[in-house]
Length: 303
Image (cartoon, rainbow, N blue to C red; front, side, top):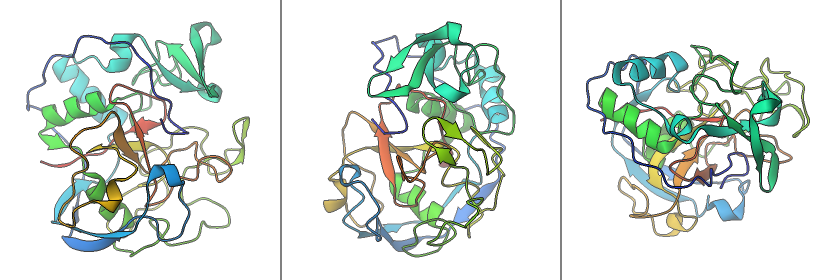
């Protein structure tokens, strides 16, 4: 479980019906050149349990990746075309950060160890704060599980990026830098949508947003990716292991063969140096494939 993304702890449910590759994926595509780069935390910023070290050389072939996270509008096209029901919809609830809640009458409980996360009945991709809240088309879709992201990819003829591809794209051609733009956070903090204030009780919104921001906010990185860090966590294809970097192959690594949680990358609007310093290129975390939260989305790569 990530500090900023609670695991669902959901009980078993029937698998959703398979989705056929018939969709129209309209997000601008960014070419990422084939390269060998130093993957991992070169600054000593990471949490040991996250497994951001050792820094190791990784070689990835050229690929094309979405310029932005998949938006609410993009995901709605998928839902309308297929009738797909997300894990949040099938289970009847999802995890909402307490300041994003729209109606306390729908709170089913608080997450153990992270009481600022609420299990909210009726929270889903179209209602990120719960019933009565409407998702905004140009914001990243949230409350999507890894399973849901895979279903979208199947429909769109896409796939989720490997963790190594994701980090290569996020770095934007800058070797061993902390952020997509360099090593330092601007004094005003306005290069990225993260928490400003006292976590978890007061977010000043100094960057303009309390929760998600439109996907084309701030500036793209050197390759042209918008908000590779901050805004929302993004699912990757790989199973997560904190010891994988010590045994990762150089050529196009795809993660462990098995696991219980999938990699998520990039941090979110809830990241803050006092609590979840994971809005960095090297930062990694994980969550179970059926978990959905108000700060997790995804972007895709060409299949």
